Structures are given as structure tokens and as C-alpha cells.
Image (cartoon, rainbow, N blue to C red; front, side, top):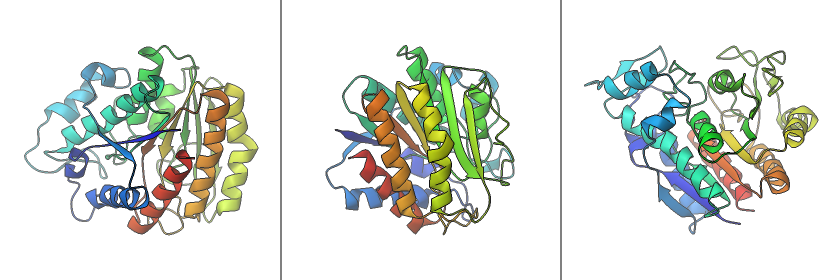
Length: 305
């Protein structure tokens, strides 16, 4: 088994402001923790996503807003989502990391990949940047696997505490993609009800505040993992948000780092069964720096198994 890490310094340059939860220190904490825990990891520089790769998931107007606004100082796209002078480059590198990781695992140069990037992506819809997210990097990666590599079935797994409304919206009419999410309910962005099923390819497990690891594991074991297993994906993509941790300031679930290790281990078993072990994981949320570092290490440790 081999694992490759994709990142880029530009992802640290995306300037959201001193009081913003989605700040550069998040990514620095993940990178430092992974280097300390796994000194032999294969680190690679993320390329830029191309315009054509982004247009598979996004409208031209969104590309224009993110890439051509060229702000001289920070500006708000919505109350939470910031565009700074360096944001376009960061967003291109974050999406490009997912594309390069897909190329690597499908080209058999590595079995698994983790993209240590920001800004996160799973709230960005086809035409709207929102929820800290500029481009939906996991959707760009999934469509690259389908359209450039000819895959027929890709599963996107999302355990971020916030529902990936953008990912769901992009794929809810595309039966080639299964989307499975656990998330706190109610919570931003107020989507992800069990009744939201797309064309039979959307599986949501909303969790009430104060949900602990046992209930989280039961939700995945009882419905989400069996749905992925039945789908028989050729590639697993993971929106790896660690803000369901009990110490996270933006939500109210009660997971520990070990719970993120558990779900990664379960996904590895699924990937070994259906995908020749192939997993691409991308960093999403997580806003307590210590919890984020611990959870990322637990996640990557299982990807190395």
C-alpha cells in the first residue's frame, strides 16, 4: 500500500482575516502533525486545476467571480465566505490537488491520497461559492474520474459536521455518483434530510446535537456503509471534515479522534473490496487546531494500513 499527500503553500495564503474560523493555521496544524507522525510520507505539490476541469462542476460565472475579480483586499462573497488577493490561487491548487490525486490513484502510481488543502469545498454549488468554500474540489475530482478516466461509479463519502449541500446538489441527478453524508441536524446549511434522496443515489444520516461516537458509528454501520457497499464504487472520494469532534467550536457533536480513525478503517475495507484499495481524501472542516491535528493523524494512519 502507498499513500501520497498533496498540498501547496498557496493554500496558506488564502487570507480570511484574523477572526475567521477557516484560517491558515488550520492547514499548518495538519501539515505539522502529519510530518511529525509520519516522517516518511510522500509529499507532492498540488498543481492548478484547469478551467476545463473546473467547468465540469461549476458555471462560468462562478469561475469568473473567483478567478477574475482580483480584489486588492479581502472582500465578502457572503457573510462567511472571503475572497482575498491570494484566494484564487489557493482555490485552484485545492481543486488541482484532487485532480492530481485521482490521476495518481487511477494511474496506479499510489493507492491512496490525502489532500491537505484549503479552502474547503463541499458547500460550493454549481454556481455559488458559500460556507467558506470557493470551488467544490471533491466534485471536481469526482467528475474528473468519471469523464477523464471513464469510471462508471464513484462514491463520495462526507463525515464533516456540516452537510455538503454543494456536493449533493451537483450530483443529485447523476446516478454515476453516490453521495453519503453524516452531519449534525439542525445546523448550517440546513440541508441533508433523510428524505433528500436524489435519484436513489443520495444517502443522508442527520445526527442530533450531542451525538457521540457510538451513535455516529451506528449511523454509518446501519445505513451509509451498506449503501456504499451495494453501490460497488470503483473509487472512493472522502470529504474529510473533522469538525464533528467534541472540542470543535462551530458544532455540537461529541466525536473523538478515534471515531475518525474508525470510519477511515471502514472505508479502507470497502475500498479494498471494490476499488483495489483506491481512496482520495480531501480536507474539509475542523476548527479546533489540536482536535484537527489529532483527527487528521488518526485518519491518515488508517489510510496507511
